[in-house]
Amino acid sequence: MYQKIFDKDLIYQCSNFDVGEGGGVETYLASLFEHRPPDVSDRVIKSLKNVDQSQFKLLHIHSPDLLLQVTGECPTIFSVHNHSFYCPSGTKYLAEPRTICDRNFSYLGCIRGKLVDKCGSRRPLRTFKELQTTQNFLDVLKKIKITFIANSEYVRQELIKNGVPPEQTVTLHCGISVPQTADAPLSLEVHQNHRILFAGRIVSDKGLEWLLKTLIHTDPQIQLDIAGEGWERPRLEKLVNTVGLSNRITWHGWCDREKLNKLYQQSFAVIFPSVWPEPAGLVTLEAYARYRPVIGSAVGGIPEHLQDGETGILVESNNIKKLADAINELYRDHQKSRHMGEQGHALLMKEFTMNAHVKSLRRIYTKTIAEFSSRRKSLYTHSIPQAK
Image (cartoon, rainbow, N blue to C red; front, side):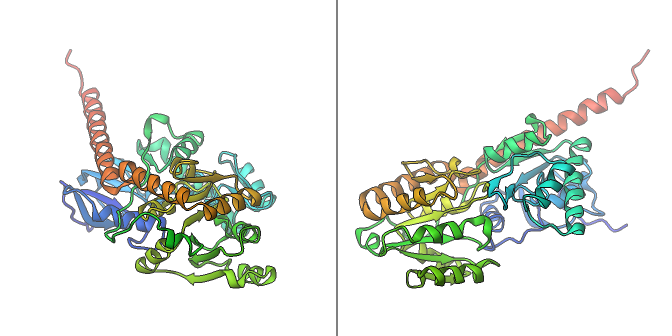
């Protein structure tokens, strides 16, 4: 059998996600490779089938499906970027009651969630496949000892609730590459443009409908820029026309890094209105990098990045009045908006740069390698027959 050759002195990233600007995980991986230390390979492993895993210094896995190919022959880390490891639908959000799911994984509970609460797909074959896949992921815990890196404490607690031993989990918040462009604190001139920004996929979980319905209750001078694409866009465009907001909204579609940067710079605040429990959310950090305050939902991992009243404003999800009040508050107060943006930038530079993230990641690598070596040595010692 053909075996691929890898450098035994290097750590390898394993992912079926693209590395680029496609979204949260893709952007994170691109930044991670940009800042990778010397002992991390620039090669991405997309499959571990027919690979001698004993040759690796460490495998860092980012795609849940690759967990099913792990043999346990080398130190292994799995970064949990979303809910798909323990949630068949991957959302932890029940669309019918519009609430966050508080169930742990189970066949009965998740089938009820799909059929009654409209959680994700309700097609029989797809539902069965999703349930089976999640069970397979959790079964990995019984076979192989893996270090799980959660991108928020919220996600770490979900892992523990679903059977991951606490001692095998660690929280490591995401970091971002600080833009090279010369961003500056929010000026009065930009604030008086009266523009806010939504950046993300246009799907129901991201809360854009809530934001659009809220915009009616904000000062009529406020303009909304929408950067992103998604299957919900046609329906939401009709909603905008129906409620008479067309002259206050600009649909930019998918934006490259340069265009998105301009949209951040021309806004006085960034709105992060997710209604599903966002695992972490890089939008907050991207806004801080441009000295912009964030108005975000108090769900999932968002509150771990957004300091309410300091770097932005947290609001209860789907609460139109609270969101409108927050937007109007920053619209009317340039100094508060500027101060929150400056506080956010300071927090980013202190805790959430990719350089800081990689330093913490290397400590996890070192600890995982040492623990794996210790376990192997212990097993070897106990396997040697004792002299009589």
